[in-house]
Length: 342
DNA sequence: AACGCGGGGAA
DNA sequence: TTCCCAGCGTT
Image 1 (spheres, rainbow, N blue to C red):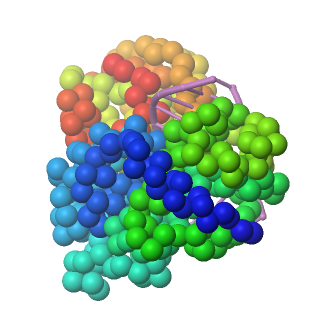
Image 2: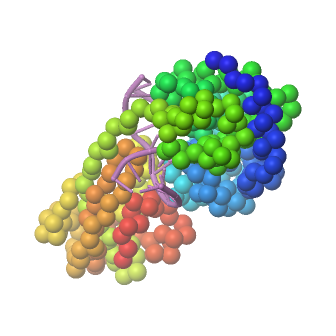
Image 3: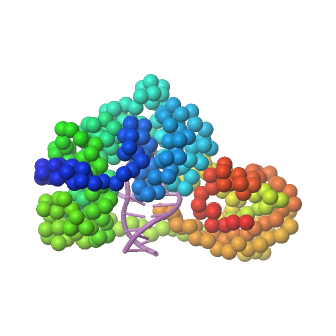
């Protein structure tokens, strides 16, 4: 696969002519680039902005990240999703402190060895923070290049990503490697939009784009269809005793691992069934009120929930009792559970 | 290669 | 509703 060498210059000129101002672009230090790239994995720029600023205030350098407490990390990441990312990043920070004296390694190969850093992120850090000619092929770049080259294969295929990586490597500039990496993603984010909505009139490389020439931008890229989500029914209990609410820590593995939750059980229980269930759990309840239904959609699963507010006489064991203020300020409660309020 | 892993904004 | 997002690690 061959990419026109002219793309490099065209994209750099276009990038210079005006690109988005983003917090992590103000100071592209290795740490800033690293943290921003981890946050941006499968996450939109607009969602990341406030998280990035807050994160940098609390944990301004690698040493601080390496030493941070779990609950602090969770609270900083709460609502961003894919929580594994922040723990892997901390593991990497510890490795960098121990093995690299607190300095981010620079080579693509070394970066790739760190937890949470895959081919895309290693390329992004190597090029943006360390100015090396290493491509970073993300979802934007896949879409842009699929259209430019008229790629007929499904873009999720590993081989397609490999082909794009090596085709890009050949046309990387000598200087401004990071700007070139970002120009490709910027193009995908603001011009070469998905779902047949590209703004080809604004595109600096339309002259080299096969999909544009053939009027096929609405057909490309080709993506494999995804599997339907499974549905899980749950009954969620807001146990209230005085001004305290019961929460508990989720399991260490699986969905939302390490975060907190309201006590809940499988199945959609009626009020009578819920009362019976709670009694079997040894909970003495004073009053139970239906809170209605809520639906929460994850990528691979959908929760259909019914909630009950339960007034209790005492704070029973196996849970932690906290105020709503604590839930706000200290507890990382997934948004799935925030559908229900006292 | 397929799957698990979040959440929200836009069409 | 569906789609997609500056993906990674495990199986």
